[in-house]
Length: 219
Image (cartoon, rainbow, N blue to C red; front, side):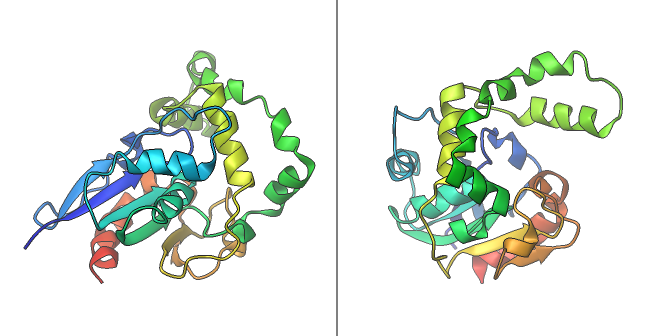
């Protein structure tokens, strides 16, 4: 039996290291990882998705994306033929964005966000120590943050908020945690709910994902 190729796209600015605990049966699947690339000035989401597709070397593959990566794989599936599209901790349309994101879009408040601060996690980690929640979050950011350039961060945040898809693709398989505070479950429809799953459940709910992803891909 030929193996199924599965491509993974991480969350906004994240490294593919977030998938380090995701294991699919090697006799059935081949796993590949797509890192973020720097956007071209004023590049559209669709043009960026086309460039990401150039890194996909197999036809009729499975695309799995987390958070902004979930948005990206949906756009990529409009360009290349896919076997399945699975999104985790993400949204299927702009209708599922929380109200504060919709307000940020309407007011253009997002343009005032100092995204350069996100690239200073290494600096912050010198001063935040211990076992506090903040210290643990900084440690996670420090481990998984990959794309720290301001032009990428500005571009990515803008393209989440200005995403044009208003009608979900019914073929997309959506996995979502009931404790996700970035994209609250109250705004999400037609998804597979993971109890206790947060926005970073790709990291801390990997056992559930390892158990269920093969079935979702093959069904």
